[in-house]
Image (cartoon, rainbow, N blue to C red; front, side, top):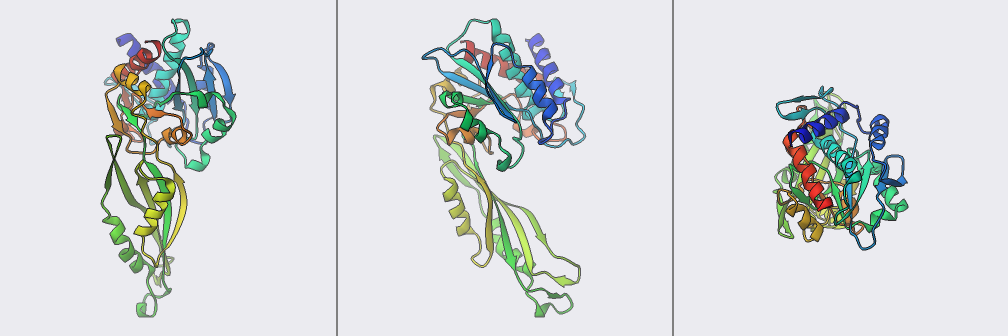
Length: 355
């Protein structure tokens, strides 16, 4: 196990040390594609998404192992290092550790007897960006294979558990209007900031809602993430704008989430929906998910975030998150992934695929 963990750590560090901030992925994209073993053939290769498949066997379920290779911007955490039983550095948890696991696993399986499932590999970029940059819809339009998948496993950080479903993501701007004027005579103006303070107070105090879906508790939350107002120190502003982020549970559709948000905001404010991404269906009842847990995953938990699971589930494809990284370490300056977690993820996926 120590030798396996060291090999996975070395591959993770190799990937960490290739700068790969979203929209600057060319080097990492070409590198990870060069690591795909010869026994996997490309079915679809798009600009920032590529799907590779094995020789399919009739009647054998298909499992797609999927990973993104882009990261958030660096925070002084490049180059990486191996220290204290962990790989440290940008993307180690989210999700170059998971990417290293799946690449090494598939490279090792080239000469192994085939097991109870067929395996495919999906590599993609631009994951850490808004939905408009998502490369997967283009791949779905061009690929027949992906629609045959009985389970897609995204190597997102889950600390070795299966994270089923995911929250939906709604972004909106709420604008409060007033009348501008001189700050020495505020009674002649109508301060948009004052209106914003009053109008946002109920939203800031809005309590999270627990939604239990297939036995898993998801927490629906509404947050004010940005607030902008004012043009000068001596001007009463006539506009204040707040950015709202609504993470909605899998028991709501996008349309229901928008309608619910409209019911919460003040009637005299202007609400603009900037974008939505659907919640992911909970696939905890899938026999392959049960097999993944039996193979060694640390149980099933809800995914308290948005992931590309939703891209698959809205198209009727079962998908879950399972990876070696810890969500608590993702996107941090001190991001890291433990060597033991890399080995655990590798061995669990190997048991699922080989049997």
